[in-house]
Image (cartoon, rainbow over all chains, first blue to last red):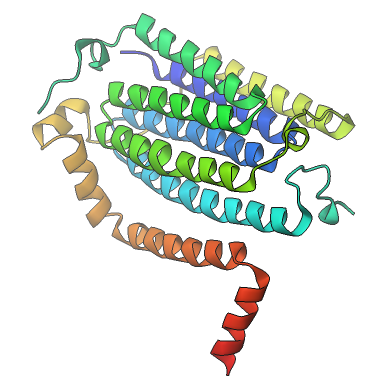
Length: 100
Length: 194
């Protein structure tokens, strides 16, 4: 049995990489993909902790997280397409209406 | 009950195999973040999701491993690839990392959070939660992982399950409305109002 802590460290590394991608990539699609990476890190923690505590609720939570991730990807990509139609770019440096 | 390959069996999963998986996941995640072209990133994301599905299977979460591959690798990443294909981005708009003062501060703060989390993990035992009654042996004796997850999902968690279906319905409508061209949408609304 691999200790649960090992999974937590792996998930922390993945989450950190996801944050870096979401903050530093200019492409909006890449930002969404980094968010998917972060959600996957969270899923790993849920499953590892659920196994460590002999509980099934972690796995059920992951089902809902995957549902929300699918919805988020669909709506987010629809917004990317709408933005691209309106402004002709998905570069976050040029989308500065909300930046003031 | 089908038998997993020996090296994926949870009781036999050696720490070496886990470290191999962990190293691969870390490298592939890094490649997802730093790849210049979004298509490359999406393909690396698929590899990452498959590796994670392997880890889930090694933790006796067979159902989650299956839907990880079906839903994540099969549907979500394909959606990403479709959008990348539809947008047909020019090379100059897809490249480039950004680095300025606010981002540097954000990176510093997130790195400190990362260090704190890692330090807490290594400092001692994880806090003991309440042990549920679903040990691996109990699950196997009662019909296997998929059966037990389904039973729990469709009895105890039936209302969140139904709400999730409502959320998906809303997301479908929202995605169509957002991505529709303005003219078509306006004419549709006009037709509805008439």
